[in-house]
Image (tube, rainbow, N blue to C red; front, side, top):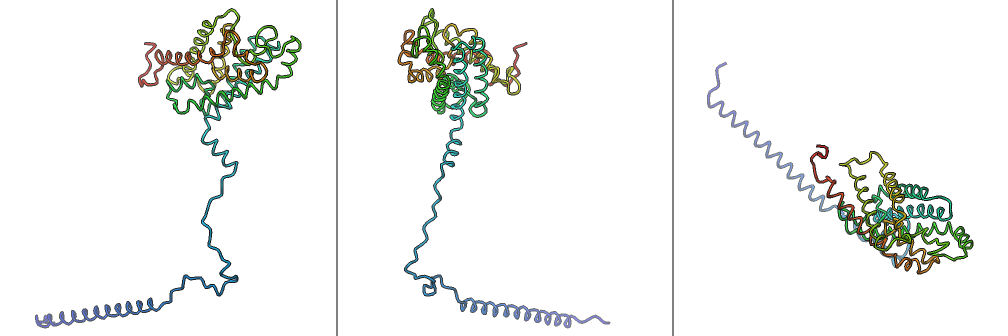
Length: 344
């Protein structure tokens, strides 16, 4: 076929363009009409009233009261106790751990005071009392069980200072409760001893029983000598405790650390109990001393041996930081990332 002329091709394109334009305009018109119709429908649509129709209520409207605002139920006693435990786990652990220590330890002393066991038995008993107390509280509070230990850990191990006083109070209360319960359990035996010796709750002399719960120096030991002994033994205790807990030294594997601490205490008892009684712990001595004062021994537990009562409180608070300082100065390498070179 012969090719179409330029005029024919041009006229065909113009016709097609006109058809497309009319189609688009018609589609837009349909959309506009539908939009207007939808707007009229929306305008005429009835919106339900939010007002309450009181004429259809089953009760008179005058008797209706507005809803009270939501208020949570007050916590139960169990919930309060659980919250208190969550907020004070360390303090509670120190109380229970020190209670365990003193209940078991002074129980051993009571049996020894009645002639049941000798010094070796006392040392072994206190060793296991220490170990059991550490197992009770160690996973929560590290089982300080001793105000001198708490003070030393705050000075050298980063223990929070704000927790020092609460821990010390918990330790004192635990020691008081533990020794008091041991006294109640052995009260009949102590009464029998007093009757046999013709005394009533003696602190010194024949039939003295106050030393079952608290400590006193030997009769030939002066106050200054006893103070020195308490400083020395407490410093030795803390130096070795630091070593047992030093993972960059030869720290024990597994969970045998509490047994080693107990063995350390037994060793100190066997070596130095004949000097000052090796209290090494203000809570271990002061709280039972108050208990014995209230239980019938009277003020002599404070005035005996030239007012000795303050020595087992002050001397451990001096000796414990001294032992921690010695270990930290000579051995501790927790701040050193290099391999120890002590064998080079």
